[in-house]
Image (cartoon, rainbow, N blue to C red; front, side, top):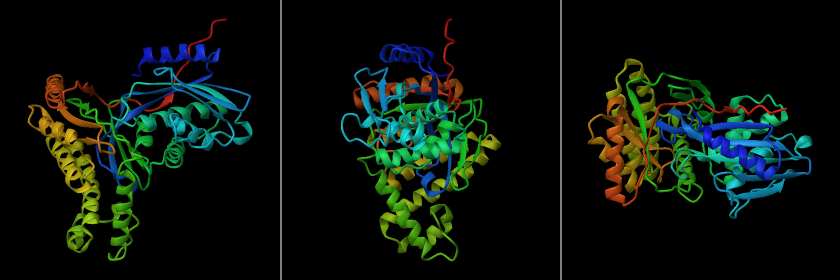
Length: 396
């Protein structure tokens, strides 16, 4: 369940700042990627889950052509920008780019006369749990409801992605936005990113997910994320010129074909494509193992996924590797891997329910000894997706 105390904090802050009550409120969760890394923009498959941490967005329309945005958790963060055609910004207010982009892409021009907005979130920033998508999607739902639009969830996901591309400069796939929107309690989100077909396989009752933030913050705009995407596109083009069947993305290449051609490829493209092709096959196998209740086999796929991230895609880091290796030695751990874009952020551990607390404690202690700082593992089950959040009834 969303953090009710955080919502009340945001509501009080909105009334204090705007001098009135909000007319709409929305909540969008972060997400954890369970299996399928960097496969979304390669038209592949991902298993993910919404989490019970996320972002509230409270808003009310203005009529003066101005947009005013504040953060209830960090009151010093404030921004004001024009309602008409807001531009991306590259200064201390760059955190607003996600909202600027969503507003510019969603608000009807003839009715976009501004808004007062307050955000409040409890996703650790830079943890690889997609605080950016939670902000985009909560804003999108709030703006949709302000204008009474009938925008469907997939279109909201595309708007969030476009805001990230055009305003934040990250060429992300749709994974984060789709997971935030389509999450379901006690279910994973299985997405085919070619057809955008979404299924929700049940998450096993005898397991928990433990998310451990390394504290190493990834800055995807400044990192190699976009470079990795370019490598994947170049690898797909390489196969397209050689295979006897259509190849629009790495999703169309099998591991058998990769093995046949890898020695002739530029080494960097061979490594990057091996990761994505292998990840797609691991997701397909993983869904089958879930259906069969073979969590040990599913967990092994998670370890294999991390090894591929580490050696083929090279989007891990020493802190992520340490936690995965430490988790692998703990009784009750079924699998572990980095989650999300990589280069920092969080590890996700699949654990037997009775041992989840002891595993989290052991990981916390190991991290303190290794890194000299306290980490706060989250024990969770998949949660509900993004939705409007009810405002209190106004007293007469």
